Image 1 (tube, rainbow over the protein chains, first blue to last red):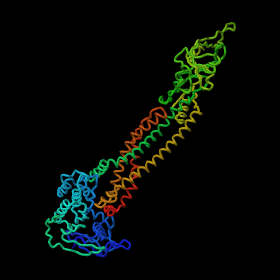
Image 2: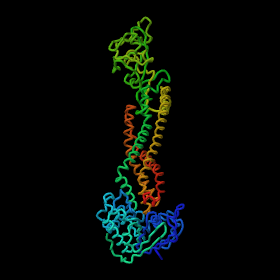
Image 3: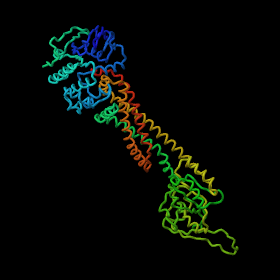
Image 4: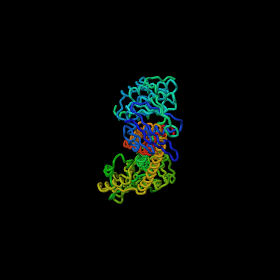
Length: 230
Length: 384
């Protein structure tokens, strides 16, 4: 059984079919990239996978359970328990320190644990910046805090929306390296990106066009090792 | 770390690290709480303040004899039924017909120090007599006899027939007194000569009798009525009565003034709520993205309400504390400049101000926070 399965998914706004009969399976531990031009339906697909939106038609099976008809309240619970989100614009709470931002995800999930949050920051190489506010961190550092926050509750899927879109080359490499580490540890990664070089390091890439799955490529050379080099 | 600890860490971090934003909100709440606390303090202190002002209009209770006359001891007895803090002045009066320059005039023997307290509206040219040997002359008499401050006047009194033979000549008693001041009131007092009671007793040769006592008491009409009833029923020689034109006017003015302050307080409270609600709406609106993020990472609507209400109520509490202090200063300034006296600190107003401030902020926050929970995290996080 796949960890995530989209079955005949439609998302319709009036006459516009943002997603048009999309079918997709994501296996546990897989690293998938989703590519496509602007308006192709990437964000809509991410919102549906991230339990922030519901399809107009079709089924979304997460761990074999259809979540497409769940209430907003239940979707919040599912998102909190099973999905870690990484955003292009980082979205850290400006008045909380790096460690407090990580603990925020713990707070909503279960119980805040400062030691565990510090370990998560250590995993992304930011233990020494734990007490810094987002405004005192570089873009790359902020994105790494965002990664630490996404992985702190051991989610089944980490869903990243343009995670390197606002980063320079050096920080882009650091973040992609982190994804490699997470993948090697068995985390399922779904990365929405414009950047072909970021997409290519994944095991599989699907291409969206006009709301339909246009193409799918398998990275034959994927070894799970860090090869990303810009 | 417990969830509660993290909760307080978050809301205090929001207040401390977003100082400039929160100061605007805090200022708005504190100003509202200041005016509210100040007005409530004035509302409750107005009767006392106005009571003191009304005492300028003279006595509001009089003792008359229930049969003939009464004594100083009866006055003391009656006075014992009145709380000493309420007594502004008690002035005994004894009236006798005396002669000045062989013309009859009415003399009032009194305690002129107390008369100054019970009749503060008296205007005296010169000085109030400070002891025996001097008198206060009504302005009409001063003009009639061409007697002025510093002049000496001989006051005569013809004693009553005491049973001696008709052949015996009854000699007048006389006393030489200095005019210490000339009394101007625009009323009948200007036709009287006021002596110290002991001087009049010496002149007449009779002591101990009092015809009337005027009392100035700082109390509302209900309390005055209760004092009068108690004294009339307990002290046989006295008939205690209220000076109705004074007490009724006091009650009317006081009721209207309190109603006005209450109305202003209610209007200020409503304006404060609007102001705080507007500020909190602005605070919530500028944090839409943060709310969206919190929802995206798993916050429930209840959780969002709890966090923002916590911040709002903490702000309300702080604003209430600041408002209590500033409100007292505000009330004090109003009292000093309007009533020329300082305000009485009422400790109960502090917790009431804080509670009202927290409640007003809570209610004001409710609407913007409820709308904040409708925020779609997907839209906000995309920057739409």
